[in-house]
Length: 255
Length: 241
Image (cartoon, rainbow over all chains, first blue to last red; front, side):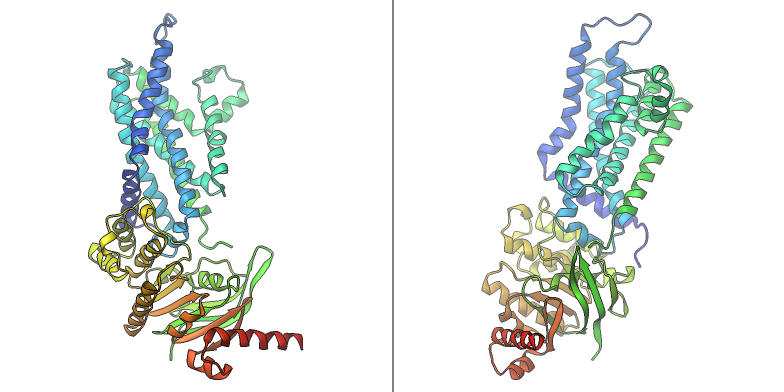
């Protein structure tokens, strides 16, 4: 019998996805190096801008937030393309005839790209704090943790979005649809308190809002706050719900 | 003789087109059954219904005593799609090992399956760098590795040179001798002679269900291609009359 979930088959799938990544050194290099370089651009942009008295320097605020946004965006894109490839190459149809369950497949992707995101986050956080002097009050491990949870959220939403894309052109355009509104409303561009009430309500139901809030909490307090843990919980719950939904939209029988 | 697959009144629509208008046929266990017919005759659709990935309008497909596509069948049925469906960015061995793991087999089984399709020496190569025929064999190895009771192969010999084709058909015969049921689709009639049983399909209709010997005797020719053409013409006259 095919179980709903088999750790062995999920693990095999995680290994397979990681092996695919290993054979693509350019993607690996871009995954690990690119966020750090982009962060460097932001650092140079704000280096000579004087900080507003009584507020943290702009780079400390924005740079820290970016540590959560990069993995979300990158993993969303990478996963939706990977899943679309699975669909168009016929491997998905084939996998669905094997004992691998749909949840095994999706969790396998989530774990593999989550692991890749962990490496990405370690490198980026390391570069940000040593090279660019990013100042974080709380533990850097918590920053890495939040980055990984954000990446898994990106993976889950990417898997879900790919179910609605029938071509690469469509898949790529889901990125602005899913990512940009969350980015605009997450509280980075305009503090959430200053948004119109209805925009704030929309912002309340977008998961990236909680990622940004969690990072702001780590940036401001030396020890982990209850709000931060609540936020991490919310992001993880949304990610799991999106994975389950993606499994539900994955049709075994197609026309 | 037991049937491994029975198809009863199967109706399948793909888009606006009715591909199978009510097909009834059976596949004997432990034999090589050839599913032959021109392209567009519904061969792939029938095979997809057998492995349980085809949406069907009505009818029944029973595989190894269970409804097609039921979870219990997934470790007992191997499926090789027409286009090689393996991971281009993995090596041959990594592909075989992944599918081996899905069927609960180890790396020894993966290596054996690669040896079976003559790819032992290419095991370390990325699939991306292989020829079309080699990719097809990787795809086949990834189904063989699960040692399924029923092996469903959609045009497995397309793009293969004659020597490899003969080797592959020898392999199919050996598998059947060991008790495996094989359904092999092809649009090349010279492969029909290698099958124990022949299902001839045309526009979703079963034109003939016989053995190569019967087909030759009934149509009065030794050439199976010619036999098929005669059947088609006879059917056309029937329809016209």
